[in-house]
Amino acid sequence: MATVEFVEGQHATEQVVAHALWMTTGLSCDGDSVAMTSATNPSLEDIVRGIIPGMPKLVIHHPVIAYENGADFMQAWFDAEEGKLDPFVLLVEGSIPNEEINGEGHWAAMGQDPVTGQPITTNEWVDRLAPKAAAVVAVGTCATYGGIPAMKNNPTGAMGLPDYLGWNWKSNIGVPIVCIPGCPAQPDNMTETILYLAMMLAGHAPLIELDDCLRPKWLFERTVHESCNRAAFYEHGDFATEYGSDYRCLVKLGCKGPVVKCNVPVRGWVNGIGGCPNVGGICMACTMPGFPDKYMPFMDEAANAKLSSNAAKFTYGPILKFFRKQSIELVYDKEPEWRKPGPSLNSGYTPRW
Ligand code: SF4
Ligand code: SF4
Ligand code: SF4
Image (cartoon, rainbow, N blue to C red; front, side, top):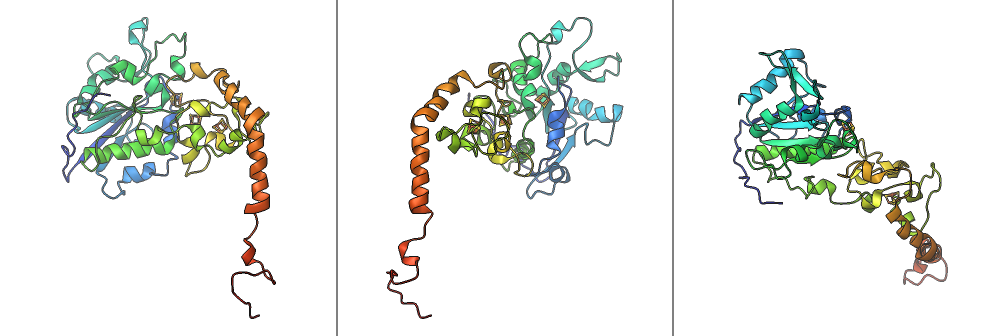
């Protein structure tokens, strides 16, 4: 990625009040917003109440937690457009439709134009606000890469924010689009990234580090397989052939974990608990730019997984498993000789009881 021109600390001030404008009006099911309410590290409540040490005050404008409604709720969007909310972060949930092929209507909109009384499309809000935002965040795989609404042959021309604004787009302080994929995104991945951006805007954190797909690097650098608690069973060639196995590897049932970047197996879902393959569900690759088309049919073993899984099953896997089991039973499941009572004690210690 190109070098950014972010100046660390340029917003540093004790009085920083940042705003987060969260739009759920992409082509969206609102699943990311719902998921975020179960975040624990940090929790949404902790962020809203601003009780995290060092965190600047962050005002979140989000339809799920707002007291205001209707025109009162929309006022923040008009204020941001007029430069009255500075700095602000624009968060978008749901994919961006192509309004050039909307016929005589529109695909997605939020609020209405006070002059014309017409709906203001999601695209228009993004056009108006993105140039003024300190950072733009795409939340969920629909907003990041198009996701389910952007499947082949969809009628809306749906796309992710990077395809809409451009992959090299940067905010007015040099921050690239931040993508938090997942369908829905893992709750803590969302709140942690929001917290990071708030700290960054206050000058307490360096520019967020992203990978080539604009994902926070520290969250998405490992594959599901590398963190899965069933990985040793893959190595042993011990595969589940039907649902319900509480430990065997799920690759033969369609798990795509070996080629998917996601931290859910290691982070869990709610407060460290759960996490797709850890609890018996195949990984369907919901965080990936190629989701869903490139991973279907979901419940078939991937063609490129067959070679390595069959190699593990029919060659080295059973041998590894056998020798490890032998080692455990004969050596490692037993105490060292010198700890055993009786005449064989050889530690030099003579018991006095
Ligand atoms: Fe819903 Fe998934 Fe799209 Fe989020 S990414 S809006 S959870 S379909
Ligand atoms: Fe890898 Fe999936 Fe098997 Fe886990 S269940 S070890 S992620 S293939
Ligand atoms: Fe999505 Fe797979 Fe991660 Fe589960 S483990 S959240 S299915 S990418």
